Structures are given as C-alpha cells and as structure tokens.
Length: 188
Image (cartoon, one colour):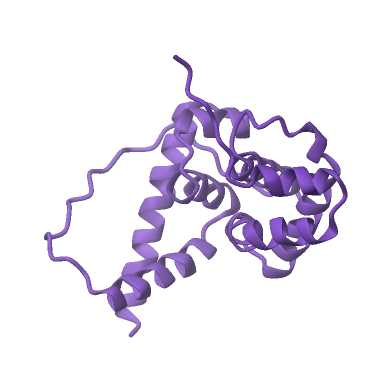
C-alpha cells in the first residue's frame, strides 16, 4: 500500500491558484523565514539571500499550477530554493574546492554532559559564524547535509559531483568548523 501525501496547506494553495492575494500572503508568511534561512546559509550574504527569497517566491507563485501534491508544498518549495541557490553560486562561479582524496579522521565524542538551553543557543550561533568562514563549496555541502537533511547521494546528484566528493567535502568542512570553533574559544 503506497503512502498518501497530505499537504496541510492544500486549501491555501488552491486559493492561491484562484488568485486570492490574501492566500498568497499567508503562504509566503508560513514559509518565508525558513526559506530565507536556507538562502542565507547557502549564499552567505544577507542581501543576496533576501533577493533570492523574493525571486523564489515570485517563481513559485508563477509555477503554482505545476505543483501536483506528490510531496508536501514545503519540500517542493525547499527543493526550488536549494536549486536556485546552487544555480546562483554556479553563476557567480563560486570556487568550489572538491577534493576526492582526504584522510578521514575519527573525532572522539565529548563526554555525555547535556548542555543548558543557553549553552546550546550560544553553540548554534558559534557554528553559524564558523560556517560563514567556510569556502563556498564546503559551506554548501555542510549546509545541505547537516542542516537541510540531504544525504550524500542526493547532494552528489544536486551538485553533479561524486558521492565520495560530497563525503570528503563534508568531512573537510566539519573539521574546519571545529578548528574555527576552537580558535574562537581561545579568543574569548
């Protein structure tokens, strides 16, 4: 028995298809923040992310008739956002450092002490700051894998690279983020 996809925003989408401006605004408000965050992480520039968000929603609203409810609206939208960001990076000819040969290093796990909510929020902010310092190729793969939930097979298909390249670049980005975070803690 096949799983049935139910989109909780189906009626809102149908209203948009009928030209209801208020429905467009509601749909935008539901997804704008999360889609902006994806744009921001991938493009690493706030104003470019804002422009990209507007471009994405303009495109999505024009193509809304092609949405067939085969997946949730959110996942369809996210795929469009990711693809448009990658295309923008390619257009800018972002220098992607793809290296197939990288030594895999085991990183020992820290003790099992659970951080407080404050420590956790501070850690997230530090990781975001560290991500901003990554080269474009590393940052995109790190973001797609860790934050957007894509696996290495999907990343390889999206970026037209090998799966091993995706894995090695993720590991390289992870090690670089750890190095940056270590440096940040010494600078306190």
